[in-house]
Amino acid sequence: MPTCSCNDWSRSRLLRSAAAQAGQGLPAIEAGMPIPAGTGLTRRSFVSRTAGLALAVYGAAGLGPKALEEGIAAAQAAEPSQRVLVSIYLSGGADSLSILAPTEDTRYQQLRPNLRVQPGQGTPFSEDPSLRWHPSAGGLASLHNQGKLTVMPAVGYSDANQSHFTSRHFWEVGDTNPGGRWGWLGRFLDRTGNATNPLQGLTIGWDLNPTLAAQNVPVATVSRPDDYEFVSPDVWNTVSEPMMDTFGELGNLATSDPGLAYARGAVAATGRLRDQLAPFQNGFTLPGDYPAGDFGRRLGALAAMLSAGLPLRIVAVEADGSYDTHSNQAADLAERLGNASAALLAFQSDLERRGLSDRVLVHVWSEFGRRPAENGSGTDHGAAGIGFVMGEHATGQMVGEFPGLASSQLDEDENLRANVDFRAVYSSLLEQWLAVGADGIIPRASTVGRVPLVA
Image (tube, rainbow, N blue to C red; front, side, top):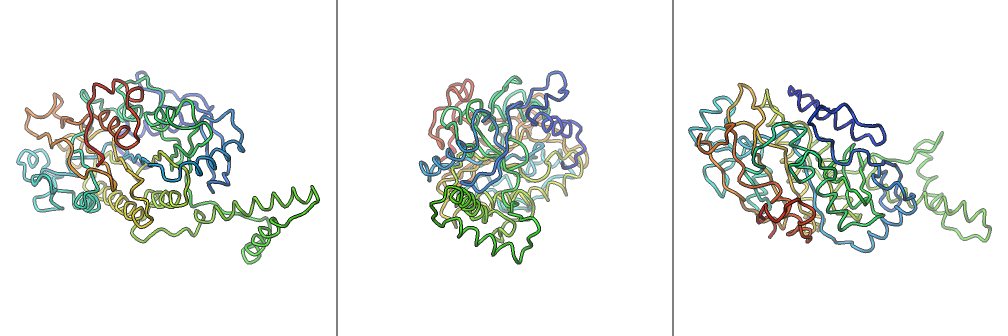
């Protein structure tokens, strides 16, 4: 777990990790804290021959491995080109006033004497010349200039809760309801998914992302899609590879003997699984434009899984590191933002090279922004933050203007005021990209409005 000086962030991570362990009971969550969506879902592990992945599957207690395997295969055959939504979380509350900074604003210069982005630094924001991208956000600037990044400079909700645990929970369940039990994308899968394809909702990470917690259909996690290999006891590499090749050939030979037929069938299945796993094993090479780190590697593996035709619908990935920059913000934010920005640009380029970019839309979010006033070397929890929608079909425009930093423009806690509701973003993604009505998935969807995200 990345270190951070914020006790609330560290406690939130620890409690969520404990809550995610199915069947282990609940941790000692403090009074008033919401229980993470999906807590208590049954968790089972199996290796999917169809997917070529070792999966942890949630919410499939009544289904055997064969049913799940057949469900993946059937979904793969039925909908090879369906649209995919990728949800990317910037953990800890990313500082919108650094990512897209009003560098010429004298109020900004007063509030950020040490941490402000200097006039002339970074790339100008093409839609509002008063804003400039952080110097480390070159990938985001490039995507926006290409018309592939929709930018929401002030997204959130009114009366913002400044607890990591609670505010993140609101974003995960799609409602300002501490009692929310299921993720907003899990509810989408409950309505449109099927009972046997766990890849319809995939977290690429160690634990199930609560946004995908579904009540009635299975979802899955895979921690490292590129880290599986076959090992034969007491057989080393120089012999192992030819041996496995031969086994695969022998397994396909015909025989009338029932015992031999069973054995050869098992060998043939092992050979097929080995072949399907091959693209994701050690030695899987990412295109050179992906940055180092788990985030870029997971996005690269996701592009490869999509290219292999796996029946993915919703995918959740967390970016590297924490954006909870109470101290040492200048260095920490630059490093993490630079990595995330480069990884997103590389992922979009990879999708385009593979001919997949028309199928994939990416939503990037964080639980809140930071306070306009610095605390010295960092910034504390704020209200409105920044959000993005990336892809070939993104509108590529700013949604909601920068709300301003004058005292009359800030909220009662002197934080940036949201002018785009996160539930309007969710409702718009559901209707404009996933082609399903938001009513019944987002509580009170008819009251939150819609914003133009998809072209």
